[in-house]
Amino acid sequence: MKFYSTKNNSKLVDLKTAVLEGMPKDSGLYMPTEIPLISTKELEDVSKISFQELSLFIAFKFFKDDLSKALIEKLVHESITFDAPLVNIYDNVYALELFHGPTLAFKDFAARFMARLMSSFVKEDKKKLKVIVATSGDTGSAVANSFYSIDNIEVIILYPSGKISKIQEQQIATLDKNIKALEVNGTFDDCQKLVKTALADKELNKKIDLSSANSINIARLLPQTFYYFRAWSQLDKKRRDNLVISVPSGNFGNLCAGLIAKKMGLPIKKFIASTNINDVIPQYLTTGAYTAKASKQTISNAMDVGDPSNFVRIKELYGNIFDDIKKDIVGFSFTDDQTRANIKDTYKRYSYILDPHGSVGMLGLKKYIRQNEDISAGIFFETAHPAKFMDIVEKEIGQKVLIPERLAAFMDKEKRSIKINNDYKELIEQLI
Image 1 (cartoon, helix red, strand yellow):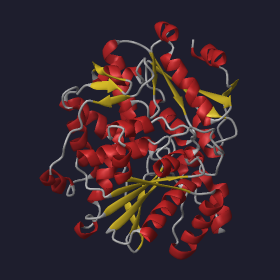
Image 2 (cartoon, helix red, strand yellow):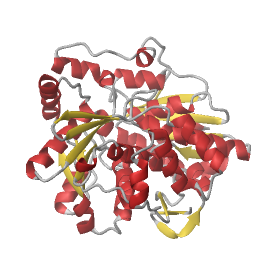
Image 3 (cartoon, rainbow, N blue to C red):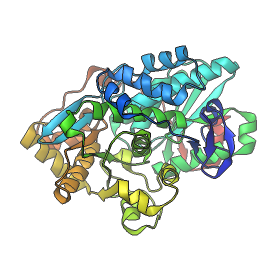
Protein backbone atom coordinates (compact mmCIF):
# COMPACT_ATOMS: atom_id res chain seq x y z
CA MET A 1 0.00 0.00 0.00
CA LYS A 2 1.20 3.49 -0.83
CA PHE A 3 0.65 6.69 1.13
CA TYR A 4 0.36 10.32 0.08
CA SER A 5 0.45 13.67 1.86
CA THR A 6 -2.79 15.54 2.35
CA LYS A 7 -0.92 18.49 0.84
CA ASN A 8 0.40 16.60 -2.20
CA ASN A 9 -1.37 13.50 -3.53
CA SER A 10 1.06 13.01 -6.42
CA LYS A 11 4.12 12.01 -4.36
CA LEU A 12 3.71 8.51 -2.98
CA VAL A 13 5.75 6.72 -0.30
CA ASP A 14 5.76 3.20 1.11
CA LEU A 15 4.62 2.16 4.58
CA LYS A 16 8.12 2.23 6.03
CA THR A 17 8.73 5.80 4.92
CA ALA A 18 5.33 6.98 6.16
CA VAL A 19 5.85 5.41 9.58
CA LEU A 20 9.45 6.49 10.14
CA GLU A 21 8.87 10.04 8.89
CA GLY A 22 5.69 10.36 10.94
CA MET A 23 4.70 13.51 9.10
CA PRO A 24 5.47 14.48 5.49
CA LYS A 25 8.06 17.21 5.04
CA ASP A 26 5.36 19.46 3.55
CA SER A 27 3.59 19.41 6.95
CA GLY A 28 0.62 17.47 5.63
CA LEU A 29 -0.48 14.09 7.01
CA TYR A 30 -0.07 10.71 5.38
CA MET A 31 -3.15 8.96 4.00
CA PRO A 32 -3.43 5.54 2.31
CA THR A 33 -4.06 5.66 -1.44
CA GLU A 34 -6.78 3.07 -0.98
CA ILE A 35 -8.91 1.71 1.82
CA PRO A 36 -9.32 -2.09 1.76
CA LEU A 37 -12.89 -3.32 1.56
CA ILE A 38 -14.50 -6.02 3.67
CA SER A 39 -17.37 -7.99 2.23
CA THR A 40 -20.64 -8.82 3.97
CA LYS A 41 -19.52 -12.44 4.20
CA GLU A 42 -16.22 -11.44 5.78
CA LEU A 43 -18.06 -9.24 8.26
CA GLU A 44 -20.20 -12.16 9.29
CA ASP A 45 -17.07 -14.27 9.78
CA VAL A 46 -15.28 -11.71 11.99
CA SER A 47 -18.26 -11.61 14.33
CA LYS A 48 -17.42 -15.18 15.37
CA ILE A 49 -13.72 -14.86 16.18
CA SER A 50 -11.61 -13.48 19.03
CA PHE A 51 -10.44 -9.88 19.17
CA GLN A 52 -6.87 -10.91 18.43
CA GLU A 53 -7.96 -12.94 15.40
CA LEU A 54 -10.14 -10.06 14.22
CA SER A 55 -7.25 -7.61 14.61
CA LEU A 56 -5.01 -9.92 12.63
CA PHE A 57 -7.60 -10.09 9.84
CA ILE A 58 -7.83 -6.27 9.61
CA ALA A 59 -4.04 -5.86 9.84
CA PHE A 60 -3.56 -8.23 6.88
CA LYS A 61 -5.97 -6.08 4.89
CA PHE A 62 -3.82 -3.01 5.46
CA PHE A 63 -0.27 -4.36 5.58
CA LYS A 64 -0.10 -7.59 3.54
CA ASP A 65 1.72 -5.91 0.64
CA ASP A 66 4.35 -4.30 2.86
CA LEU A 67 5.02 -6.72 5.71
CA SER A 68 5.56 -10.46 5.90
CA LYS A 69 2.79 -12.62 7.29
CA ALA A 70 5.07 -13.63 10.15
CA LEU A 71 5.76 -10.00 11.10
CA ILE A 72 2.09 -9.02 10.98
CA GLU A 73 1.24 -11.95 13.24
CA LYS A 74 4.05 -10.96 15.63
CA LEU A 75 2.86 -7.34 15.76
CA VAL A 76 -0.71 -8.30 16.56
CA HIS A 77 0.08 -11.10 18.98
CA GLU A 78 2.43 -8.85 20.99
CA SER A 79 0.27 -5.71 20.97
CA ILE A 80 -3.37 -6.88 21.15
CA THR A 81 -3.10 -8.87 24.36
CA PHE A 82 -6.22 -7.49 26.08
CA ASP A 83 -9.86 -7.18 25.10
CA ALA A 84 -12.25 -4.28 24.50
CA PRO A 85 -15.45 -5.54 26.17
CA LEU A 86 -18.87 -4.10 25.37
CA VAL A 87 -20.91 -3.39 28.51
CA ASN A 88 -24.66 -2.81 28.45
CA ILE A 89 -25.43 0.22 30.65
CA TYR A 90 -29.21 0.36 30.08
CA ASP A 91 -31.70 -0.43 27.30
CA ASN A 92 -29.82 -0.13 23.99
CA VAL A 93 -26.94 1.97 25.36
CA TYR A 94 -23.51 0.35 25.62
CA ALA A 95 -20.01 1.34 26.74
CA LEU A 96 -17.01 -0.01 24.86
CA GLU A 97 -14.33 -0.27 27.53
CA LEU A 98 -10.99 0.61 25.98
CA PHE A 99 -9.01 0.88 29.22
CA HIS A 100 -7.92 -2.70 29.86
CA GLY A 101 -4.38 -2.26 28.53
CA PRO A 102 -1.13 -1.62 30.43
CA THR A 103 -1.70 2.14 30.97
CA LEU A 104 -5.50 1.87 31.23
CA ALA A 105 -6.28 4.04 28.20
CA PHE A 106 -7.47 3.41 24.66
CA LYS A 107 -4.15 4.59 23.23
CA ASP A 108 -2.53 1.33 24.40
CA PHE A 109 -3.89 -0.58 21.41
CA ALA A 110 -2.30 1.47 18.64
CA ALA A 111 0.75 2.68 20.60
CA ARG A 112 1.90 -0.89 21.25
CA PHE A 113 1.37 -1.86 17.62
CA MET A 114 3.25 1.21 16.37
CA ALA A 115 6.17 0.76 18.78
CA ARG A 116 6.76 -2.78 17.59
CA LEU A 117 6.41 -1.84 13.93
CA MET A 118 8.86 1.04 14.30
CA SER A 119 11.27 -1.20 16.17
CA SER A 120 11.26 -3.74 13.34
CA PHE A 121 11.99 -1.01 10.78
CA VAL A 122 14.79 0.51 12.86
CA LYS A 123 16.36 -2.89 13.46
CA GLU A 124 16.20 -3.62 9.75
CA ASP A 125 17.98 -0.36 8.90
CA LYS A 126 20.44 -0.57 11.81
CA LYS A 127 19.75 3.06 12.69
CA LYS A 128 18.81 5.12 15.73
CA LEU A 129 15.53 7.01 15.83
CA LYS A 130 14.16 9.81 17.98
CA VAL A 131 10.39 9.78 18.39
CA ILE A 132 8.74 13.02 19.46
CA VAL A 133 5.18 13.21 20.72
CA ALA A 134 2.83 15.81 22.21
CA THR A 135 0.24 14.67 24.72
CA SER A 136 -2.82 16.09 26.40
CA GLY A 137 -2.86 13.13 28.77
CA ASP A 138 -3.15 9.48 27.79
CA THR A 139 -1.10 9.49 24.58
CA GLY A 140 2.06 10.21 26.52
CA SER A 141 1.66 7.40 29.02
CA ALA A 142 0.68 4.86 26.36
CA VAL A 143 3.56 5.81 24.07
CA ALA A 144 6.12 6.00 26.88
CA ASN A 145 5.26 2.58 28.20
CA SER A 146 4.96 1.02 24.73
CA PHE A 147 8.45 2.18 23.72
CA TYR A 148 10.11 1.75 27.12
CA SER A 149 13.45 -0.12 26.85
CA ILE A 150 13.14 -0.61 23.07
CA ASP A 151 16.64 -0.51 21.59
CA ASN A 152 17.75 2.30 19.28
CA ILE A 153 14.62 4.42 19.81
CA GLU A 154 14.57 7.44 22.12
CA VAL A 155 11.18 8.93 22.92
CA ILE A 156 10.71 12.62 23.79
CA ILE A 157 7.28 13.43 25.23
CA LEU A 158 5.97 16.98 25.53
CA TYR A 159 3.10 17.63 27.92
CA PRO A 160 1.48 20.87 29.17
CA SER A 161 2.50 21.73 32.71
CA GLY A 162 -0.35 21.54 35.22
CA LYS A 163 -2.91 20.48 32.62
CA ILE A 164 -2.91 16.69 32.93
CA SER A 165 -3.91 14.53 35.89
CA LYS A 166 -1.36 13.53 38.53
CA ILE A 167 -1.60 9.87 37.58
CA GLN A 168 -1.16 10.65 33.88
CA GLU A 169 1.93 12.71 34.71
CA GLN A 170 3.39 9.94 36.86
CA GLN A 171 3.00 7.47 34.00
CA ILE A 172 4.90 9.82 31.68
CA ALA A 173 7.44 11.60 33.84
CA THR A 174 8.85 8.81 36.02
CA LEU A 175 10.41 6.61 33.35
CA ASP A 176 14.12 6.49 32.62
CA LYS A 177 16.28 4.76 29.99
CA ASN A 178 15.06 5.80 26.53
CA ILE A 179 12.16 8.02 27.67
CA LYS A 180 12.53 11.80 28.17
CA ALA A 181 9.58 13.84 29.45
CA LEU A 182 9.45 17.58 28.74
CA GLU A 183 7.03 19.59 30.88
CA VAL A 184 6.07 22.56 28.70
CA ASN A 185 4.91 25.91 30.06
CA GLY A 186 1.89 26.09 27.75
CA THR A 187 -1.09 24.21 26.38
CA PHE A 188 -1.40 20.97 24.43
CA ASP A 189 -1.75 23.02 21.25
CA ASP A 190 1.60 24.63 22.05
CA CYS A 191 3.16 21.20 22.52
CA GLN A 192 1.66 19.95 19.26
CA LYS A 193 2.92 23.01 17.37
CA LEU A 194 6.45 22.42 18.70
CA VAL A 195 6.31 18.79 17.54
CA LYS A 196 5.05 19.71 14.07
CA THR A 197 7.70 22.41 13.74
CA ALA A 198 10.45 19.92 14.60
CA LEU A 199 9.14 17.31 12.18
CA ALA A 200 9.05 19.87 9.36
CA ASP A 201 12.48 21.36 10.20
CA LYS A 202 14.72 20.30 7.30
CA GLU A 203 17.97 21.30 9.00
CA LEU A 204 17.10 19.40 12.17
CA ASN A 205 16.13 16.31 10.21
CA LYS A 206 19.52 16.32 8.51
CA LYS A 207 21.14 15.96 11.92
CA ILE A 208 18.84 13.35 13.51
CA ASP A 209 16.33 10.75 12.37
CA LEU A 210 13.07 12.09 13.76
CA SER A 211 9.56 10.66 13.77
CA SER A 212 6.29 11.11 15.64
CA ALA A 213 4.10 8.86 17.78
CA ASN A 214 1.04 11.08 17.85
CA SER A 215 -2.04 10.04 15.92
CA ILE A 216 -0.54 12.08 13.08
CA ASN A 217 1.56 8.93 12.50
CA ILE A 218 -0.33 6.53 10.24
CA ALA A 219 0.91 3.57 12.31
CA ARG A 220 -1.05 4.95 15.28
CA LEU A 221 -4.17 5.61 13.26
CA LEU A 222 -4.85 2.40 11.35
CA PRO A 223 -4.75 -0.07 14.29
CA GLN A 224 -7.50 1.95 15.97
CA THR A 225 -9.91 0.52 13.41
CA PHE A 226 -9.57 -2.86 15.15
CA TYR A 227 -11.79 -2.06 18.11
CA TYR A 228 -14.57 -0.55 15.99
CA PHE A 229 -15.01 -3.96 14.40
CA ARG A 230 -14.75 -5.53 17.86
CA ALA A 231 -17.54 -3.29 19.16
CA TRP A 232 -19.85 -4.21 16.28
CA SER A 233 -19.06 -7.93 16.56
CA GLN A 234 -20.20 -8.09 20.21
CA LEU A 235 -23.72 -6.86 19.45
CA ASP A 236 -26.62 -9.16 18.72
CA LYS A 237 -27.59 -9.14 15.04
CA LYS A 238 -30.82 -7.25 15.75
CA ARG A 239 -28.78 -4.44 17.37
CA ARG A 240 -26.47 -3.91 14.38
CA ASP A 241 -28.89 -2.48 11.80
CA ASN A 242 -28.99 1.15 12.98
CA LEU A 243 -25.87 1.45 15.09
CA VAL A 244 -24.50 4.82 16.20
CA ILE A 245 -21.17 5.37 17.95
CA SER A 246 -20.24 8.33 20.13
CA VAL A 247 -16.53 9.10 20.29
CA PRO A 248 -15.05 11.43 22.94
CA SER A 249 -12.91 13.57 20.65
CA GLY A 250 -9.86 15.77 21.04
CA ASN A 251 -7.30 15.47 18.25
CA PHE A 252 -9.85 13.40 16.27
CA GLY A 253 -7.61 10.42 15.45
CA ASN A 254 -10.04 8.06 17.19
CA LEU A 255 -13.03 9.27 15.20
CA CYS A 256 -11.01 9.29 11.98
CA ALA A 257 -10.19 5.60 12.52
CA GLY A 258 -13.91 4.89 12.90
CA LEU A 259 -14.66 6.64 9.63
CA ILE A 260 -11.98 4.55 7.92
CA ALA A 261 -13.66 1.43 9.37
CA LYS A 262 -16.95 2.60 7.87
CA LYS A 263 -15.27 3.15 4.49
CA MET A 264 -13.98 -0.43 4.75
CA GLY A 265 -17.56 -1.66 5.06
CA LEU A 266 -18.41 -1.59 8.76
CA PRO A 267 -22.13 -0.67 8.88
CA ILE A 268 -22.26 2.28 11.27
CA LYS A 269 -25.21 4.60 10.69
CA LYS A 270 -23.83 7.69 12.39
CA PHE A 271 -20.82 8.92 14.33
CA ILE A 272 -21.18 11.42 17.15
CA ALA A 273 -18.22 13.72 17.69
CA SER A 274 -18.60 14.42 21.41
CA THR A 275 -16.35 17.18 22.74
CA ASN A 276 -15.94 19.30 25.81
CA ILE A 277 -16.06 23.10 25.46
CA ASN A 278 -13.22 22.85 22.93
CA ASP A 279 -15.90 22.67 20.26
CA VAL A 280 -14.15 23.53 16.98
CA ILE A 281 -15.58 20.50 15.15
CA PRO A 282 -19.17 20.67 16.47
CA GLN A 283 -19.14 24.31 15.40
CA TYR A 284 -17.82 23.33 11.97
CA LEU A 285 -20.55 20.71 11.58
CA THR A 286 -23.12 23.42 12.32
CA THR A 287 -21.71 26.29 10.27
CA GLY A 288 -19.41 24.73 7.69
CA ALA A 289 -16.61 27.03 8.85
CA TYR A 290 -13.48 25.68 10.55
CA THR A 291 -11.98 28.14 13.02
CA ALA A 292 -9.08 27.00 15.17
CA LYS A 293 -9.11 28.37 18.71
CA ALA A 294 -6.84 28.45 21.72
CA SER A 295 -7.65 25.36 23.77
CA LYS A 296 -9.39 25.70 27.13
CA GLN A 297 -8.61 23.55 30.17
CA THR A 298 -11.32 21.10 31.29
CA ILE A 299 -11.67 18.02 33.48
CA SER A 300 -11.65 15.86 30.32
CA ASN A 301 -8.12 17.05 29.61
CA ALA A 302 -7.18 14.58 26.85
CA MET A 303 -9.76 16.38 24.71
CA ASP A 304 -8.45 19.91 25.34
CA VAL A 305 -7.51 20.55 21.71
CA GLY A 306 -8.30 23.75 19.85
CA ASP A 307 -6.91 22.80 16.44
CA PRO A 308 -7.37 19.03 15.90
CA SER A 309 -4.69 17.63 13.57
CA ASN A 310 -6.67 14.70 12.25
CA PHE A 311 -9.57 16.77 10.98
CA VAL A 312 -7.66 17.29 7.74
CA ARG A 313 -7.73 13.50 7.29
CA ILE A 314 -11.47 13.41 7.87
CA LYS A 315 -11.99 16.04 5.20
CA GLU A 316 -9.73 14.05 2.88
CA LEU A 317 -11.84 10.92 3.37
CA TYR A 318 -14.86 12.84 2.13
CA GLY A 319 -13.19 14.78 -0.65
CA ASN A 320 -13.66 17.98 1.38
CA ILE A 321 -17.39 17.84 0.68
CA PHE A 322 -19.15 19.33 3.70
CA ASP A 323 -22.57 17.78 3.01
CA ASP A 324 -21.04 14.30 2.82
CA ILE A 325 -19.23 14.79 6.13
CA LYS A 326 -22.48 15.91 7.77
CA LYS A 327 -24.27 12.77 6.57
CA ASP A 328 -21.98 10.61 8.69
CA ILE A 329 -21.04 12.86 11.62
CA VAL A 330 -22.98 14.96 14.10
CA GLY A 331 -21.21 16.99 16.80
CA PHE A 332 -22.14 18.00 20.33
CA SER A 333 -20.16 19.77 23.06
CA PHE A 334 -20.60 19.71 26.84
CA THR A 335 -19.44 21.68 29.85
CA ASP A 336 -17.59 20.38 32.91
CA ASP A 337 -20.75 20.80 34.97
CA GLN A 338 -22.67 18.56 32.56
CA THR A 339 -19.82 16.07 32.57
CA ARG A 340 -19.75 15.90 36.37
CA ALA A 341 -23.53 15.64 36.66
CA ASN A 342 -23.58 12.72 34.23
CA ILE A 343 -20.88 10.85 36.19
CA LYS A 344 -23.00 11.25 39.32
CA ASP A 345 -26.30 10.33 37.64
CA THR A 346 -24.91 7.30 35.80
CA TYR A 347 -23.45 5.85 39.00
CA LYS A 348 -26.68 6.50 40.93
CA ARG A 349 -28.91 4.96 38.27
CA TYR A 350 -26.79 2.13 36.87
CA SER A 351 -23.87 1.63 39.30
CA TYR A 352 -21.44 2.29 36.44
CA ILE A 353 -18.40 4.50 37.02
CA LEU A 354 -17.50 6.81 34.14
CA ASP A 355 -14.30 8.75 33.64
CA PRO A 356 -14.77 12.36 32.41
CA HIS A 357 -14.06 11.45 28.77
CA GLY A 358 -16.49 8.55 28.78
CA SER A 359 -19.03 10.85 30.39
CA VAL A 360 -18.74 13.29 27.50
CA GLY A 361 -19.13 10.39 25.07
CA MET A 362 -22.23 9.18 26.88
CA LEU A 363 -23.72 12.68 26.94
CA GLY A 364 -23.31 12.93 23.18
CA LEU A 365 -24.99 9.56 22.68
CA LYS A 366 -27.91 10.40 24.97
CA LYS A 367 -28.48 13.71 23.18
CA TYR A 368 -28.49 11.99 19.80
CA ILE A 369 -30.94 9.33 21.02
CA ARG A 370 -33.32 12.02 22.29
CA GLN A 371 -33.37 13.50 18.79
CA ASN A 372 -33.40 10.19 16.88
CA GLU A 373 -35.41 7.32 18.32
CA ASP A 374 -34.94 4.86 15.45
CA ILE A 375 -31.52 3.49 16.45
CA SER A 376 -30.99 -0.18 17.22
CA ALA A 377 -28.05 0.43 19.55
CA GLY A 378 -25.76 3.21 20.68
CA ILE A 379 -22.17 2.75 21.80
CA PHE A 380 -20.02 5.32 23.56
CA PHE A 381 -16.31 4.85 24.18
CA GLU A 382 -14.92 4.66 27.71
CA THR A 383 -11.39 5.71 26.80
CA ALA A 384 -9.70 5.72 30.21
CA HIS A 385 -10.07 3.99 33.56
CA PRO A 386 -11.87 6.25 36.10
CA ALA A 387 -8.99 5.78 38.55
CA LYS A 388 -6.88 8.02 36.31
CA PHE A 389 -9.23 10.85 37.30
CA MET A 390 -10.14 9.72 40.80
CA ASP A 391 -10.09 13.24 42.33
CA ILE A 392 -12.88 14.24 39.96
CA VAL A 393 -14.81 10.97 39.93
CA GLU A 394 -14.80 10.28 43.68
CA LYS A 395 -16.41 13.65 44.43
CA GLU A 396 -19.34 12.78 42.20
CA ILE A 397 -19.95 9.16 43.18
CA GLY A 398 -19.22 9.61 46.89
CA GLN A 399 -16.95 6.57 47.02
CA LYS A 400 -13.33 5.61 46.58
CA VAL A 401 -12.29 4.40 43.13
CA LEU A 402 -10.24 1.22 43.23
CA ILE A 403 -6.83 1.86 41.69
CA PRO A 404 -5.56 -1.09 39.62
CA GLU A 405 -2.22 -2.36 40.83
CA ARG A 406 -0.39 -1.56 37.59
CA LEU A 407 -1.52 2.06 37.88
CA ALA A 408 -0.76 2.40 41.60
CA ALA A 409 2.81 1.27 40.91
CA PHE A 410 3.57 4.61 39.25
CA MET A 411 2.44 6.79 42.12
CA ASP A 412 5.49 6.43 44.38
CA LYS A 413 8.08 6.85 41.62
CA GLU A 414 10.25 9.95 41.39
CA LYS A 415 9.26 12.55 38.81
CA ARG A 416 12.03 13.02 36.24
CA SER A 417 10.58 15.53 33.77
CA ILE A 418 12.51 18.52 32.42
CA LYS A 419 10.72 21.87 32.43
CA ILE A 420 10.95 24.01 29.30
CA ASN A 421 9.18 27.10 28.03
CA ASN A 422 7.03 27.17 24.93
CA ASP A 423 10.15 27.92 22.93
CA TYR A 424 11.38 25.99 19.88
CA LYS A 425 15.04 26.72 20.67
CA GLU A 426 14.65 25.11 24.09
CA LEU A 427 13.12 22.03 22.46
CA ILE A 428 16.03 21.79 20.00
CA GLU A 429 18.46 21.76 22.93
CA GLN A 430 16.68 18.67 24.29
CA LEU A 431 16.61 16.89 20.94
CA ILE A 432 20.22 17.21 19.83
